[in-house]
Length: 466
Image 1 (cartoon, rainbow, N blue to C red):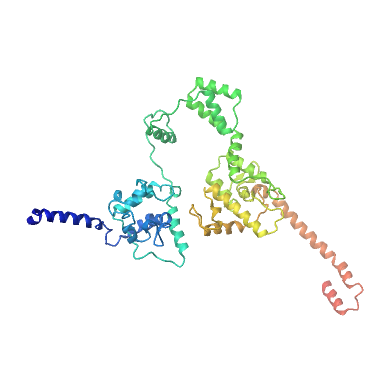
Image 2: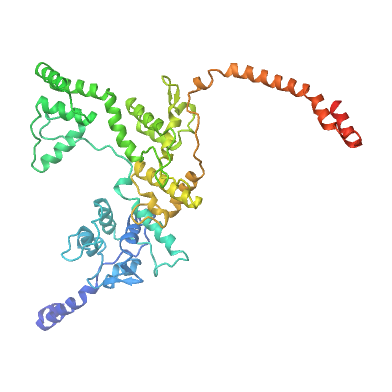
């Protein structure tokens, strides 16, 4: 070895050989089979993203840039720009650089928004583990490729932040701890301070009561209300005075009327069906007033949504009754399903039903889930985790119902005269029986008039008389 190192010619030869051969010795994923936990991580966090965001351009059938990511070999081999990943080295992996938008020319997904930070962190962790990949051999083919593709797309879309379970993060401690004790304010102030910003000064009493009244009632305060608030602010604790004013505004009928209007907009409230005849929707005002009463009574959001979806099917323990007006409030919730366009005299009744149910699905999806479910009527959704199969499953539920007018009185009202009605019903039944019995002779006379020579009719009359 000393002789080799002492020979300058041999040294140059070794260096050149290393430079030529070096790029071929790219670290590859461990040959050991992935553990069950690694397989689960890949199938849950890596493959769905590759399928939804990458396969369209980088797969065995379309190797853009000579890169195929639908097989393990293609991922490790890379494309024209080199290996896509360096197992164990996230920061050196070209794929991760492109996902992070750190590469000078490659930013993936192409022409798309940068992936969520949580998804990118999953890729970094996967590469750090050595990029364990359970895929073997060529890309799998399926007799139903679209079904397989949708399954991967659905798994990816379910990872979006808006579909994750709610968490309770720790409330930050801003530098200006005296500014507010409200948790939401502390989140806002901490972020402002991180950007070198500070909150503005407190509003004067006149400005404050005007803002508060507009926000809660949608109406300006009266001059008398402004002056009263100013006087209270001069002699009382600022926070207590604001809290008292807010309580008064929340108790105002105008508060419920203002905020119910936003909900009415969501469900597309109207009192006519539109279309060529613009027919009236009977008793639409009952739903409007029901909603205003619900806001005034501070009904919890989950209860209100439950009433909108199945208010007529709720068990007694979950049903709300209005004792003052004698109403079954919960049953009124489903009235919003009738607030849609309806043909006056549709030529194709089935087509009219399809449009009506689509409208109901559109309202339900947007109002209660923030999703455009109706887009999946003709195909799997292009953006949201909603398949065409999901759409028609919901379609079947809504199409199975029929518009009708139902009793919305409370049990007390419905049963108020029940005993008297039952007694009257028994009297009516008895009187009818007596009337029918007394009418038998006259009926027999009519049956036998002019037909006494007919032996069969005479026998029938005899049996009736008996």
